[in-house]
Image (cartoon, rainbow, N blue to C red; front, side):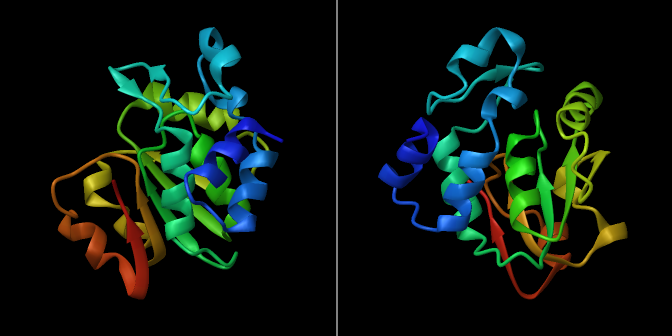
Amino acid sequence: MDPLVAAAREAGVTDERVLAAIAAVPRADFVPADWVERADVDAPIPIPHWQVTTQPTLVARMVEGLALTGDERVLEVGTGYGWETALLARLSREVFSVERFADLAETARAALAGIDNVTIVIGDGSEGWADNAPFDAILVAAAYPLVPAPLTEQLVEGGRLVQP
């Protein structure tokens, strides 16, 4: 069994669509080259700008928390290297992702090449992406003490927002 799928199951993730997405999207394609051999370990991986990728089990739990059915428009705040973005792309109709660092956005775009339901923009994710709102679901990869007001304003009535 895929080690990240096993870790997600152990962390309590039961949504088979989420688990299948984890199995189908190799994390090794979304980490710095020096870290490929550790991509299947359930741990954050350093990326530029003193950032880290989100721990895979936390990604799995947050994605499961969105309760995606496949027809949603999703806003992701914090693209990073794009692994979470790729999972969301498999589980929803359309993904809009905001990344504040241009080099990370370009790395993610390259890793996501060929996935046609993802759009990445460089900007302040706490402002959301008003031009493409409203969203059925919003996943915030970065921790904030409170949910930024623009995000709640860009969420459809009855939509779901998950952030650590």
